Each structure stands twice: as structure tokens, then as C-alpha cells.
Image (cartoon, rainbow, N blue to C red; front, top):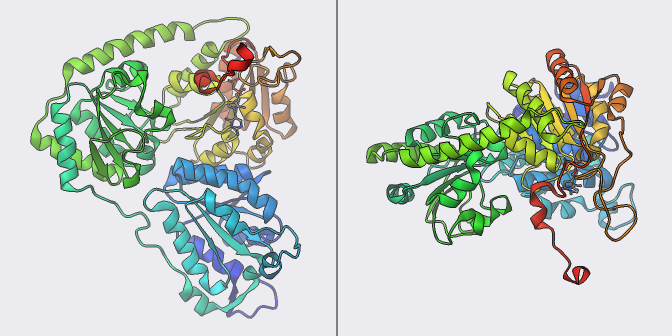
Length: 570
Ligand code: TPP
């Protein structure tokens, strides 16, 4: 508030902050600059937590992960045109992942932008944002702040959650209003994401499918993790006695060590099951669109799909029993209906799944113990697995290709929403933003397991982690390149595809440059000790784990998605 402003006045800056705070939004992830520099300052002065990043994409990823973890929209704030565009990647990623976030960007003088007269950082941001989010709004007058923020929050969290864009012309922030009038103009969103219960008929339909099934399966997706109905989901799984397969960010709703967890028998359950309950998991590329060899004989299974969005049904395969509603309400309705039907758990099927899972886990356990020199993924992940088992409250962030695929299947997660990764798009560069948000929103220790290429997309944010002294330990699986560090280019010359990076890059020294702890770990023992020290101390730490450059596969487990040239092979 300027010294000269009469006590009774308020303005756009203060009303926007009041509107966010009134709705329980306490944190802003931002990169400052014209016209939002003072907005960040005032927000902090008015008790908000303002976390300043080095690049808007990571502030945006942090906001979206905050949305996933808290069920309230995470807020990212940026400057106009370039800052806005940097944030848009995260906005689109949030929308794709169905995570609520609000991107608030300052924008230039409306009159000048609309006449394309070349203002500072001129861009029609509202139009640009629209295709990348669930809803986009512009706030022209301070008196509309209350309703605009309410609308943004409701759009972000209700129905299928997603990204929302709020355009803030700089001039609006300075508009003055009478303080009392301003207060009255604010809106508190009541019940921002109302529960939606499924219809009776739809539940009966689902129960009929289950009654006939001999080998039913539950697939749990990150939508279920988001819903925070952990106890209801657990009850449904345990009362029904069905094997469950967690998608990567649904790991931990029930611990991966649960006797009904079928993660280690994934191929068997996808192929052999005859009815599948999709619970907050979309049937997209991550599940081969519900088709193909992986899913066994065509037409061999019936799908029951739980989703908040009716349009999700039949997106890829026929859904025999759509259950439209929030995951918790649908799971509860199934529990009630199954109880009255008295359907017995399919013991033989569960035994078959358990036998397979146990055998696969034993095979894997041997590999994790190796002491190969140079260190391979298995040995390094064996150490990570031990560390997370010992400290199950640790939130695991994970990105890369081989680093992602192998970590996902090897490292057990024990608590809900304790694994954050590349999500639906498989985007690289979410790691540091996710780590910051996880630490800030939960106060817990974070362990970020990063491919060296993945880390490169967001590495500068280690300064942010050091600046805020966040309890984040980053382990870089440094195999000297993208996918592998020994790429060969059959076209001749250096390989532009796997891009061999500077050999033995000292990422640990980058961390030291910002006052964090840096360690170069060359074998499992050194890695174990460094992680133990980092997690015990909570100090910002980066461990540069030297991994055999020849250990990975190109594109990790999804190399089959690469098109191949018939002409070149001829
Ligand atoms: N750009 C973005 C934003 N996202 C992507 N997924 C890609 C590019 C393509 N891509 C997929 S994985 C990957 C890249 C560049 C990096 C894999 O290497 P690394 O992180 O070192 O993991 P590794 O396989 O070596 O364990």
C-alpha cells in the first residue's frame, strides 16, 4: 500500500491476494518481473508463501504438482508474453494430467495489444492460452477479481480437474476501490468440487459384470490418488479380494508390498483377467489403449470404468459398465453393492497372481544385489529401494527413460501420493519443480531420481532448492547421455539421438556452487552412504551416481513407439 493511499482504499494487487487467501490458497510459485513484481512482494507481505523460481516452466510444474497433492489449484504467476509462454507448457501438462492449477500471467496494455501497436511483451495471451487449458479468463476490472478467482478455482477443481488461465492486464492491478466495497466483492467458493455419486443402475450393471467374472482385476490410476479416498479404495480392494495393478502415480494408495498387489505380475493380469475395474485410470497409450497382445484375446474382457467425466467412456474400447462419479463415491457404492450380493473373492485367481508375482520379485531381488563396476541401474535402484523402505514417508520424484521405467517397477511406494513422475505425457523436466512443490506442500523429505538428460531440462532449479534450503536429495543416474552414453549413429558421426554428453559431468559440483552438498558416487556403497546422510540431514544434496553408459535401452521400455524407416533399411 503506497504511503499516500487513504486507509479506506484497496486496489487490484491487494484484492487479488485477498481473493486467493480467502479461498485457502497460501502459496504462489512464480518468476517475478513486469507487471507482477510487486504482486509477489505484497503477497508475501500479506502472509502468502511466494516461491521464486529461475524459469516459469518449473514454477508451473510445481503449481500443478501442488494441485495433485492438495486437491486445490496450485498457483503459478508469470510475466507477460515470454514468461507466460514458458508457463504454458506446465499449464498444458497439468490439463493433460487432470491436475488443477491456475496460471496467472500479467499482460500488457490492452488497448495497445488489441491494436497490435507493439507494446512491451505484447501478446494476446488469453487467445494463446485457450487451447492448452480447461478454461481461460481475463480480468479487466478490480471489482471482478472476487468472481474471477472463484470461477478459476471452480473450473480447475470441479469435474475433471485441469489447468486454468487467468489473464491480468497490468493496469487492472493498480485500479482502486473502496476497501469495504472491495471486501464485499470477494467470493468464497463453497464446495468447489462437489462429490458426484454414480446412479443405482450403473452400479447394478457393474456388479453384474463382476458376478460373472472369474478373474477380475482392479487397475488404479492417478485420478484415484488425486481423489484422496484412500481408505475407501483400500476397503474395496480388501473386501473384494481382487488383485490390483497401480499405475505409477497410484502406487502407495495401497502399499506395493500389499498381498493383493499385482504390479510384479503385470503381464499376467492384463492378459488373463476377464473383467477390469478401471479406477481413476484412463485407457490411453500407457495401457496400450486397452488393445493388442498385452490384453489377451480380443473381446476377452469386460471393462467397468470409474471416471468423473462421462465422455471418457468408450474412448478406446467398449465399456460394459460405465460408473460416472468421483472415485471415492463410486468405490463406496461398489462396496455396498458387493456386500449385499455376497460375491466371494476369487481365491484361485489371486493365488495364481501371487505365485507369478513372487517368482518375478525373487528374480529381480538377485539382480538388485550386484556389485558390477561400473554400477548398473539395478544396483543403484537396489540402494534407492532400501532407502525408501527404510523411510517410507519420503516422497519419490522420478524422471528419465530407463531411470523412470526401472525405478517405477523396482522401488516400492508405501504411502499415497508419495510418487510423482512424468505423468501422461512422459514429459522430461518436471523433476525439480515437482521436488520443490512436494517439499513445500508437505514438509516431507523428497528424493528425486533423475536421468542425466531429464535433469538437464530443469537443473538450474537446484539453486531454488538451495536458496529455500528444501529437504531435497537429487540422485542423478549419470550414464553420460540421453537413454545411453555410448550412442552409435549408423548414419555416421556423433549420434544426435542419444547425444553423448560431456563424459563424467560433475553435476555434484553444480550443487556445491549453490551451497548444497554434492557427492560423486561410483558404486552402490558410496551411493548408499550419500543417500543415508542426505535423508538423515534433510540438507539439499545432489548425488551424481555414475552409471554404466552401456546399461540403458534406447527410449527405455517404449522403444516400440518409435516409427522406423522402411526406405533406410532397404
Ligand atoms: N523432451 C521432453 C520435454 N520430453 C521428452 N520426453 C523428450 C524430450 C524425449 N525424451 C524421452 S526420455 C528422454 C528424452 C529426451 C531422456 C532420457 O534420458 P535420461 O533422462 O538420461 O534417462 P536414461 O534413459 O538415461 O535413464
